[in-house]
Image 1 (spheres, rainbow, N blue to C red):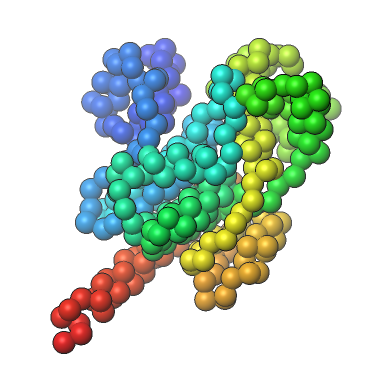
Image 2 (image 1 turned 30 degrees about the horizontal axis):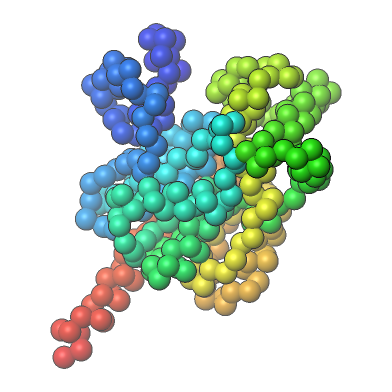
Length: 326
């Protein structure tokens, strides 16, 4: 993708790659003036197959969710595999709640599959959103056959900076659409300070990727609209106010062994569910290595889980059919 941009002077979106990964299709996307503004929606990585579709929130705000191709291939040619891309935040609108983001993803998903049973999964922030989607669908009477959360973001998050900035904005009488401005600006200024004091630290590890998306963030005081390209910042603003609620169905977790704190952060959810409703798999490496160095391990686990869900759905259908009762 980088070589295409250097050679052609135009950067293709990840959605263009998912929608048309052949040389001919990519050439057509480069010729299209509408490519950059194409709707996100529910994008097929693998549209063919007789199984019930699997919908995956890849969580890669850096536009680098190429690992989804490996996951789709591992699940076999008979498994339709769709991705729901992270939402785009804008300075023109209020940062939506996590519940609202999940509801929008459900609406997109239903353009492909109007009703359940559904099979959902997600990585990192996408995992947390997949949980909220399953919770909402369940409350609407829909059935969830499979929910797979891969190193999901913590369901309970906190930020002193967010609390302080929100209080200041409220005191200033800022409207809801402007409430996150001060937080995103202060967070960005902090990032520049850490960039000078601790350039190899965790707080700036993705800064280079962010600058590719929005070069104006190279400045400590960029224009307001540029601040909303900071997906992690805007997502954190929404996540701090999120309440997990209750999801009664089974959850399959894939944890990264080297980051046990993520596992512990979900104990408030796991602890109130029966053991039979929790399935856990430990994968080698760190959070990001789960989808890079150890993607084959993750792909094998996901493929096995979806195959089992297919078999269990088949047995349930057979048991419910009139022929099975005679």
